[in-house]
Image 1 (tube, rainbow, N blue to C red):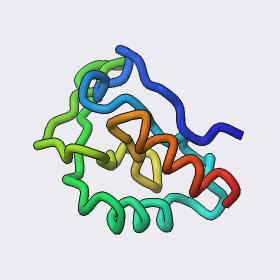
Image 2 (cartoon, helix red, strand yellow):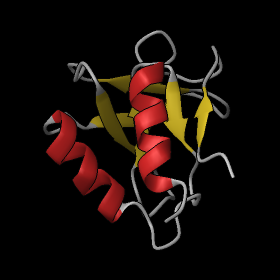
Image 3 (spheres, helix red, strand yellow):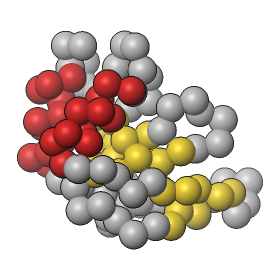
Image 4 (tube, rainbow, N blue to C red):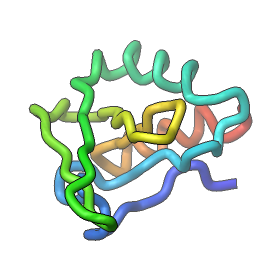
Length: 98
């Protein structure tokens, strides 16, 4: 099962990050994968999303060059975003069988 998906212009982080770990794709939650990302790529600077209309969200923060996490209202775990294909492939290889 693919656990990482490529994002498009509908996502607020499009242009800064290319991939998102699918919410709920990793059994047991995102705690261990986030820990792994911190160990591999350093700490993220968390993004904050605010709803600006019924269908639009606005994000802001200084970006971590390799990955970040976004806390979204209504979701218990932050979403993980990965900047480039090589890192997304590495993440998938490590976490696909978890």
